Image (cartoon, rainbow, N blue to C red; front, side):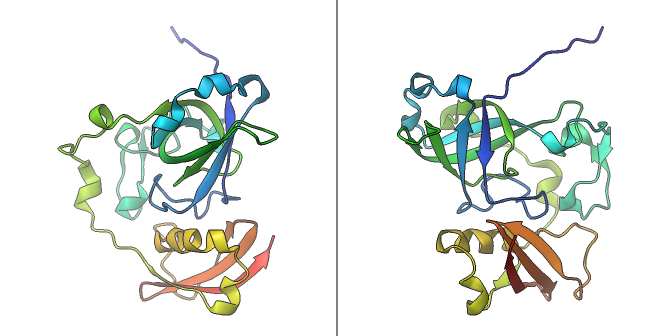
Length: 229
């Protein structure tokens, strides 16, 4: 017997990410990336947020909206393993799941109760596409959510190092000042697909309303062009 449930979208997330390419593969990896949580009108109740300022981090339960209509796969190729090894979908955080539900931990920087669309939650470290729908928000509780003794499976078996980032000054000024550090963090995470290792290839990243074009060679991501979208 197949059981179905219906969920309400309570909010949407605003982030600098205009497309999937370039989004950090996990929340918090680019800690300086900022975002906002804009509640749907039916859920814009200050009372629903009473006490939330007492928490430094919150869990976001959200929808892989671009994959919602796609079939799930029992095995997937995690990018952490260079896309060369298949693992069970439930042993990964792949977006191709039976139910397209994601979970992200973000830092709560504040609440703007006076905004026209308020209350708005200000957060840092999201790994979400701009406009991603949220199903729920829950506070992070260190005493129960943090498990220092936990094992990380295949993640700890693969040595990963980030990229150095070079952005010429004349291109860096084309990025809003409050987004420059975040862009460096995003590029340092190496957004390329695991099977792309061509040093001559030019990649385009949609970030903060700009198309950032870059190459990767010898462990260095070099920005070569920045244009407004």
